[in-house]
Structures are given as structure tokens and as C-alpha cells.
Image (cartoon, rainbow, N blue to C red; front, top):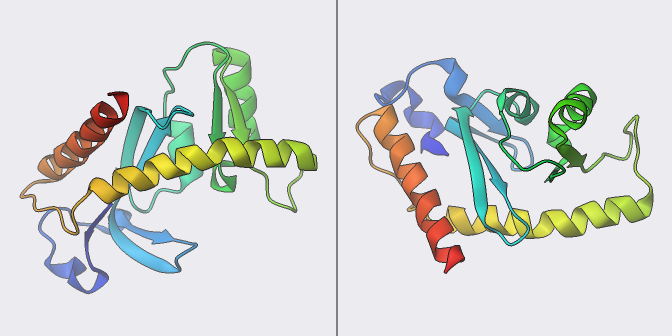
Length: 165
């Protein structure tokens, strides 16, 4: 979630510091704000979310996130969440199985049928995140950092209520 455009970072009163400057790799663009991690069901229902400053990588967010999910749950993610130790730790301790989509040069490459399975199950979740982003206005007006985060939470809550009906 971007707070302001890159050119306006020095004027931002909402948050200050380089830890809020992040990069969206596939868009080749920098942003100033928060990274929002959303855990959703295969029916596009948000279950849990986590917010971090923009400079944190997705894998760091995964390490900091405490997943409160039923035993035997499977969590699907893209290749940015690749952390073999975290996968083994969650599987051993919490019995939550991380199904991360592997890159082609991964040390633990998946067979082609497993990669296709992960991709098909990940698509509805990515669509859910896109639907949540569509609900956001172009700019979110807030005076404080907590006010900004509350508005994001309310948009997520509105989407969750809308999809549950």
C-alpha cells in the first residue's frame, strides 16, 4: 500500500524513514508505504493479514507472521516466499504446509504436475488480492499511521463481508 508518490516522500508526514521505501520487482517501481500480506482461502475469503514497512521482503514477512490456521492447512505462495527452513519448521511444529511455487533454478524443484497444481490453486488467491485492491480508492486520506492502517483493515473487512454473503 503506497502512502505517497516517490517524488513526495520528503513531504510525507504520515510516516518517515527509509524502512518504508520498498520495491515492487515485477513492476520495476519503488513505493513508499506498507507491504500487506493477506492469507485467503481458495474461495477468495480473507482469513488473516499482516502489515509491515515497505522495505521488508516477502520472505521476512513470512518469518514474522504467526499463522493461526487449522492443523493440516496448506498455504500457497509465490516464489518470493521461498524459505526452506521456515517450510520445515511450520510443517514440523504447527502442521501447516507451505506450498511455495518454485523458480526454475530452485534447489528443490517441483515436478511439472506439482507446479501446475500450485499455480491453479494460487490463481483464485491472487484474484482475491486483486479484488481487495479494486476496493481501495486511488488515494487514502489519513492523518496518522494508525488511521491509514485502520482504513486498510476496514477495506479488507468490507471485502470479507461482501464475499461471505
